[in-house]
Image 1 (spheres, rainbow, N blue to C red):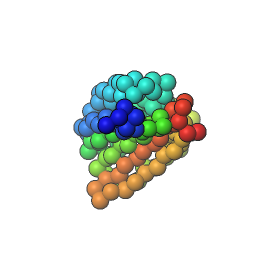
Image 2: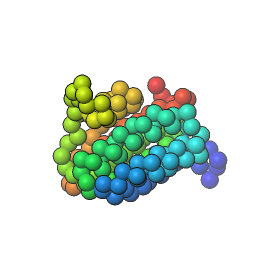
Image 3: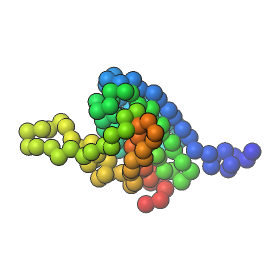
Length: 139
């Protein structure tokens, strides 16, 4: 296999986090940062970590069943992060009130900062995902 063929393969990282263990969010951020560093995409780490933290936190708080986080850097410098939980209820953006400074902004941040995002239902649960294009990837 040539170096060109090897470079065309996506780089993937996966982590299972248990329900109600919010300390896992820090571990997920660290793992994601390492994936991006090793794949040559450290510049996208801040936004990727923020959005991933929001989705993982939502999954742990709202489903209490844990989640599986998969981050993939595709050829062309596109990062795709998927957070699969085991609760079939769709994620709903929360309209925060003036005195609610810490809740309800996760999906709005994802919508504002991601190049693409969405939700895919499964027989048991759903996957909320987002994509960020790297500096040398598609706009």
